[in-house]
Length: 126
Image (cartoon, rainbow, N blue to C red; front, side):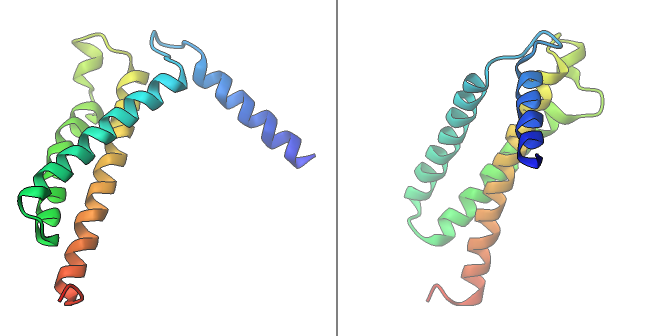
């Protein structure tokens, strides 16, 4: 009984996700592809910048810089009065989805930055 309710609720959520409520509702596959492309772009930038300085310290610096760089689109897509919704006529659903995507990217880059920083300062890297 509970399993049926969970499955029914999940199906209802997916149907609401696919419905076109505000002019923008691409398929989940499209959103997944965009997310993967942006994540790959960030990983390439992290790998390319850390190749110049092949130490853990180089990866720490690069991940911190990328996290700061990705804060700009995070704030752009998440401000209280979202300028992209009003000026450029993007839908709120589209902009909030992009805000959520960049929030996850910033979170992962921050975890890499802080984790490796703690690794360096703990003396385990020697």
